[in-house]
Image 1 (tube, rainbow, N blue to C red):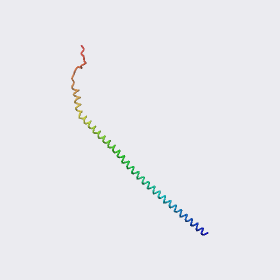
Image 2: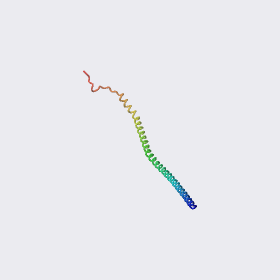
Image 3: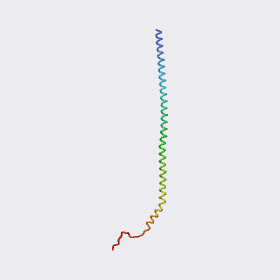
Image 4: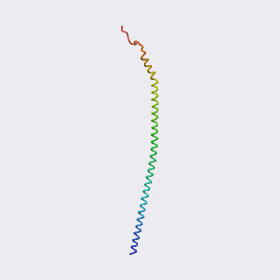
Length: 118
């Protein structure tokens, strides 16, 4: 009977060691999975940041060129407006003199269609 209890004790101890090894293996597996998940998250975050940076650069290039174009158009418009105002100011006196000359130079005449009734 002693050999049976001793055999049973050995079996129980072997079973206990096996359970401990299985539990330890499960813990290692869980740690490896957790570590792999963290590494994957870090890699995903790094990739996302790279793509975001590329997007920002492309967006800045596109919007920057539009901003330059609108600034150029506005500058050209201002130049043209100033040139028109300068031309108007230069021609103003000449046109005013011509109008006043025409208004003041009155030559009384009889209209060619007028018939004197006799």
